[in-house]
Image (cartoon, rainbow, N blue to C red; front, side, top):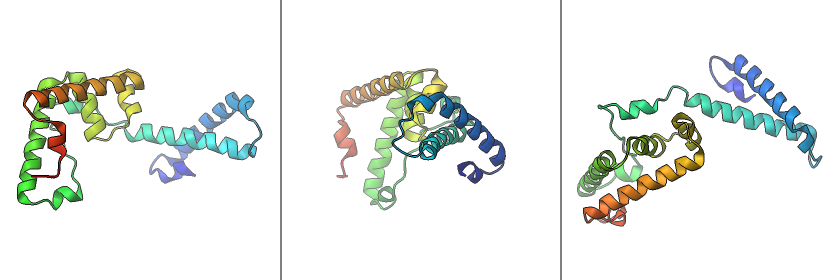
Length: 170
């Protein structure tokens, strides 16, 4: 079972998943159309519940407030390409990252900055960020869209185009 792969509270989690799944299956029994075996249909519901809960538990100790701490910084994604870049290219990438970090701090609202850092740099799922911010997923999409637009306009005000920052030319 999926929950048995989670260290520590596996038994308790499995019981919780089973109870939640049973409640959901009973609530949805009217939608069972008989196109598959009942057990296949029920297992799909149970797996969906288990996966959703495991994702939620993964991020339960993560704090958006930690991103607003004065000593926090925006981590830069590191790729194999970045690691193998020439010294000149590495310097350009570092400078670009500094400019973007500075613009994130200077131009975005606190809420936009928290959402952008959590989603883009920490990899927190949208659903979890939306839940932590007390908003819907659609509202979070709009918040992130507005943040990207603000960053784009701030870059343009410095005569920088996003395409230039993302190009492979040093």
